[in-house]
Amino acid sequence: MGLLLLFRVLLVAAAAAARAPAGHAWGKEGHYMVCKIAECMWQSFLTEEASTAVKDLLPGWAAGDLAETCSWADSQRFRYPWSSPLHFSDNPGDCKFSYARDCHNNKGEKDMCVVGAINNYTAALKDSSSPFDPTESLMFLAHFVGDVHQPLHCGNADDLGGNTIKLHWYGRQSNLHKVWDVNVIETALKEFYNDDQNTMIEAINLNITEEWSNEEKQWETCRSRTKTCADKYAMESAQLACNAYEGVEQDTTLEDDYFFAALPVVQKRIAQGGVRLAAILNTIFSGNRMLQSS
Ligand SMILES: [Zn+2]
Image 1 (tube, rainbow, N blue to C red):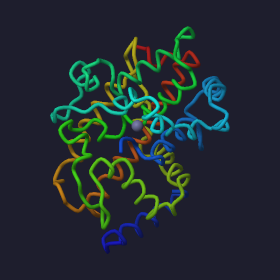
Image 2 (cartoon, helix red, strand yellow; image 1 turned 180 degrees about the vertical axis):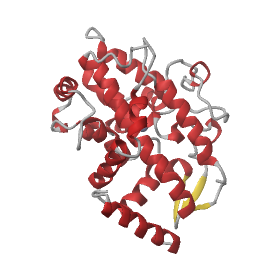
Image 3 (tube, helix red, strand yellow; image 1 turned 45 degrees about the horizontal axis):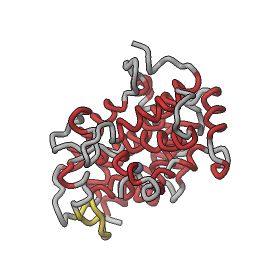
Image 4 (cartoon, protein in one colour; image 1 turned 120 degrees about the vertical axis):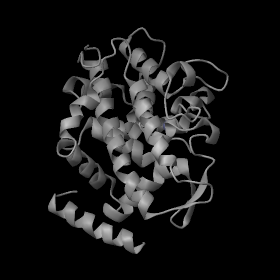
């Protein structure tokens, strides 16, 4: 641990004590946290009706916990090769997301990106005559709402969303995409949260009710009558990805400065992902009209 990091850890730990508990995808931890924030902790963003409907659809192995299923989609890439492009939507390097331009797979088939997938699985879950398996639709949806909030899932297509930018994260080999999928979260868990995901989730939840309480309602608001607002979330990620690339070159070493700039962004994106996943599920399962209100 660098001296600067140690100093900041002590500061943050003191602040946390004073405030009480303080590849291609978010890693397991990121997805788990997004879903856990959506379903419950101190407060549940899911309505009771939606929560019951979600529990009814979960596979037996989830033991009633949506979060347990939120990395399932990553394990299906070989079984469902068509699903690989659904985890992201890269751009030509202009820090923007354009559905017409960017939402396709490498064969040019449209809607085959993370935003199209969120819209399509939402529509499938709303439609009882849909041919899609509703349990799989739910697990895909919960995963992709997490993915669209990871900035590097809407990064530059030329470097595969940062995957080809090899670098060191402190002393270890990594790449820019992986830094945002797992390294920032792992380092935060280790340094601030005693390697306990639940403590980190509690800290993020506390921020939602305190620091971000004025913004939280806006995160949920979506004025689209027909679709989700996943295109808006992708646009946010594309802009955040631009900042993430700043000053990062091949073989660079990222340490404290980068970590402390990235961590608040990662925590806020996890929070937004959780709140919005709950809002989408509420719309699907409990007639909450928030997503359709104009
Ligand atoms: Zn993914």
